[in-house]
Length: 427
Image (cartoon, rainbow, N blue to C red; front, side):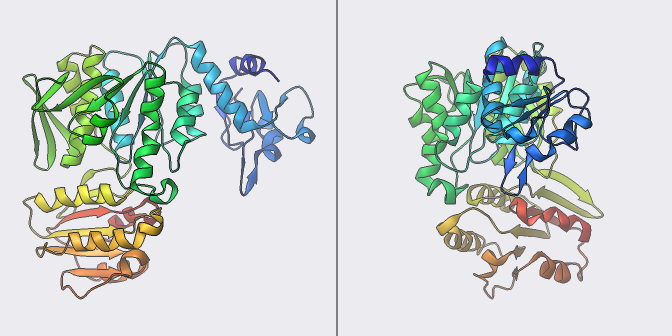
């Protein structure tokens, strides 16, 4: 079936659904497949639950004209998203990077929404399914779309760029994330730079942090809008950055006091400032948008519980983000500091080395109590008196909950699969 025909069906609906249990009236259900499920089997249920049409890719499930038969449902979803993108008079900003994508996306949205009707990726729906769903949520009232693109292997960003066709792009950084899939640090740089390649080939524009050597080197032949610290040649010159512990930024006689913790968040804020300035948002509105953004979803949240202050950054972790979070934590002038750190996933053959290296990074911090949780950290346990190693969260819980934690400053950080936000229940 031609994509234009499928698009006409889409226009008659109230939006896309991929879960037959979460159908809104007159949705278009798309029957996707996974290792352990076949969405075609739930297409009839989706119709019965209120869907107007269902896209399927197995002929035996087509029982009437409400079922739209295609060769592959996922491909149809992606093609439908690209087709929809091209029907809209809309500017799209594509965003990727090893760390800080979601926070930066939310900051950009907080700034641009002060002037424009914007829509952005919900949560971290940033993969080969999430990006099409994001695009299909845009409508004729959307003026700027902000699309987060995640990847864990080569050619994935290239594919996502072909789907969303960004007019502008920003790469937050190149860090040690998904090393297993990318094949090492150089693979990460190559994979993320696929965004730059798309922008260059299509005469589009990159936002560039000139303080990042890799960003600077990779964008010399691309249209670019730059920012950096104490460099008047940049489009936006950031004159001062402070963290105590919240990030405070100064530019163009404007001071922004954010609710974000850590120097590693400064460039996320700076990118949002720069993108806002490019699109004509006033400094006053940029300030308002950024100062009213409060992080959630376990990302750099500053919490208080009983007599304790807590930095909860348990959404994800890799060697780069862990190092940045710890560097900031070490510099904070607080007493009774406790770092609760969980294993970092998807590091492949580099995993043992990176976990060992992170432990060594903490060696000289004798005023901090460390709890390392997970089998990868546990494999490198040592006898340092301020370092505690727990093979599982349950082991950690039994030890930690037996001691009352009071008047302390805690950092909680680990990969998503470690679910270290559970620590809040035992503080």
